[in-house]
Image 1 (cartoon, helix red, strand yellow):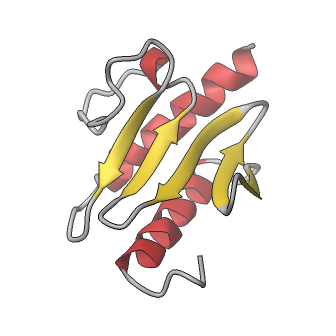
Image 2 (image 1 turned 90 degrees about the horizontal axis):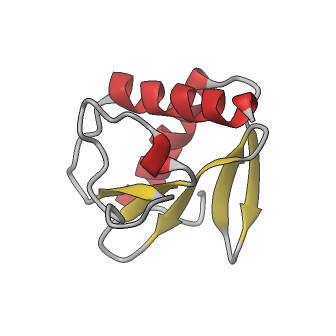
Length: 110
């Protein structure tokens, strides 16, 4: 994240903070050419950076309730869902933390 010295690095740092807040036992690994992957008994989500967005992809997003409507990308599949965050976008902290906690519960249930 340090190599991203613009808004994308700041966004990933906030995402990381929220994920660790939601699940202090989360494991963070860097895979696939520098993509952070957060897991707990399976992948929770990944954080990919692109020129105009940061994409947080939930591995089992289609199985998660999203009452706040954070998912705005990759909605047509039956497994993953994603949140595309563009420069200046705000992400609902409480809703995001709730999604992380739900994803962890889904992974730990089996």
